[in-house]
Length: 288
Image: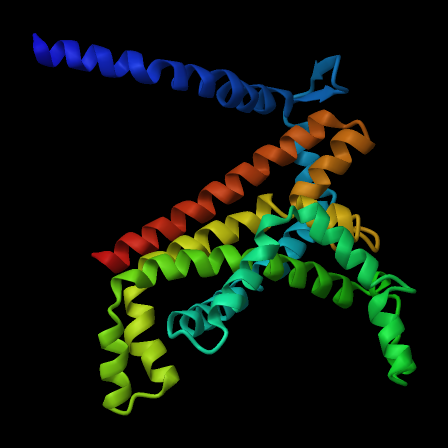
């Protein structure tokens, strides 16, 4: 009887949270899935079956959007390596490590829009970067950074790194708390250089943390770049820096095609779900 009462008490305790999730998360997901089969302007909808999905896979937009997301995805290993290097330097308490720890984390406090507008101001035609180049006698390097696809991508990726580094370092420092300082000292005494310590001591101990960091950032480049893209390039030039999540915004709130945007949201959900599922399966296989 006591066990049954405890079970009922536990269910009643979590019921409000489940109710909130059902109302504010579950219902919108179900509604979005339904509206993906309609022509919907936000008020009126007309059921059209699979037409939105057929349009997504036949008009060529999806390939361009996936290409853009893949280019951002390729930047994740680089930020992983940078974060690992910075974490180890802080863990080994290099001179000035307390100051650097604060400086690295500071951009994580700022929103993506703030970082994006700062970057847009710096790399504008008459911004800090071009002005500095001119004063240094490097006027031939002055360009319109946002009208060239490679440099536009590079600026967004740099802002992504700036925003991610501090949080990543904090995560890895937490993971490295299981490694004793004596292990590093023993490695130094045995003649292990910095890269050998990284490969033999740090990476094996941080495998679960590395997987977590990689999964979250791979998902982020599919669903979290909206703020940076919106504030830096607006998806331009053309749609050349437009990821899928930003295209959903354009179709829904600029073109008024909310049914099409809903279908694109479902496609994005499936892509992210499969990607996360595959990575978790790989992680389980490694642990086994």
